[in-house]
Every structure is written in structure tokens, then in C-alpha cells.
Image (cartoon, rainbow, N blue to C red):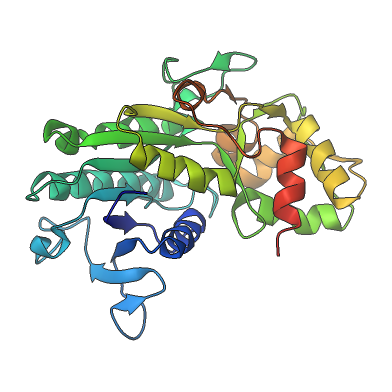
Length: 310
């Protein structure tokens, strides 16, 4: 990579933690913006740490401390699956994404010199429930809380775009890693032989292995022609039933049980309908047309690789 210094938010999450390891392995300088510093010195495994408050009128006391940043990666946002979606938690989900994105975009726009690129997290949730429809970056947004939140999230980068900064919206699918996210929650159940399809099993899952996520982020930072929405999913989405079978085979466990849709709705409320039961058949059209090649384009290969990593 040719990037000299990367500004990073969300460094303590699954993707952020892995990205820090990747960048530090390549001796790339990292400034990690955090709402709370880690105990001890300002320099940690996440790089050089600086305090910021994205909800404040002035997010940083000394924005000149981040001058010299050549690129920024913004991964902050409350976890969608942490709890049921009450009105207050939906507000937290929205504000943690939209307000932090607008604050960072405004900060970057005021720097001299400005960074060349802002790679900002988004999600394929922007498409909403679409059944069997094949979705690309040119597909319009869906309706409902999650698509509307994702749309506002992407629009919050406007100050950076207006300042001439290249902005890439990485629309994440289901990121597969045994270290966190959906797969980590599923593994104990499947390893116990209690895994099975969710709902009808016909809903489409657009997934991506964590190692490919790291490669896509680097590709987005380096590829000057890439801007706007980019679907961060593998090129072969699968149904929930296919996913269940692949995971069972990778773990050498039966997958005979089934959780009916109504039980998921009762247990998880609106979140179940908007995430677990939602069907989104998404393709990484812009990545593929830009020359990116996935290391794990097929689910079974991806699962076997990440589940056997030391």
C-alpha cells in the first residue's frame, strides 16, 4: 500500500481489530480515534490513540493532531444484533452511524492538506427485503428503518465529497469470522449438533469471509477510480438452507433442526424481520468490474479456511 497514515474509527470491533493487525503487519501508521482511550499510554496495539466525541459541536479539541492523514477508514456504529430494537435503541443505531459519519467527514474536509480518500462502512441492509431479485450497486434502496438508516449513513459523508475527498461506501454483507459477528454466535449451537435452517430457509444470505474484507478495504484505499457504493460481499450468495448445510459439513455436524419464523419474531422482534429473515441476493459488481479477485468466492471453501486458521 502507498498510504502513509490512516485515520481509523471503530478499531475495537471485529473488522477494526483485524484491520489494525493487517496494517501494522505492513508497517502502516495508524491514528485511532476513540471516545475513550485504552488504559495506559496513548500508543497501543490499535496505533496512536486520540480522543474524539462525534456527538459534540467540536468533535476534537485539536484537529491539527490528525493533519498529515492520507486516508481514513470509518467503521464506527452500534451493533445491530446487541439487543431488541426498541425505539431508543433504534435511535442509538441511527445516531451512532449518521452523527459520527457527518462529524468525521466534516473534520476531514477541514484538514490541510486533505486526505485523498474516506472509506466508510455501510451495509447491504440499504436494499431491504427483495426476495429473489439480484441486487447490484445500481439497485435502489428499500423501505423501512434499516434501508432508511443506511441511506442517511451514506449521505452523511457529503462534507468530505464536497471537499474533493474520494468517498467509498462499503456496503457490508454478513462478515464471516469465528472471532465475532453472526458466525461466532452460531458456532457453539452448530458444534453441539443443534444447528438448522432459520425460517423458510429460502432467504438469501450475502456473505464475505473476513480475510477478503481486509483485502477489499486495502483495494478501496488504493484504487483511485473506485468511489461511491461498493457491495462488500462474495460473488456467490446462498440461501439460508444452503448456508446451514455448508456450515454443518465444515463442522461435521448434523443440521436437522429448524427454527420457525414466528419463533424468531417473538424472540427478536423487528430485528428478526430486518436481518435474519430478510432476503438480499447481492452481487459485488463494482469490485469485480474494477479487477478485484476474491480469495474465497465459494462459501464452503471460505468456511473451511477460516475455521481451520490458527
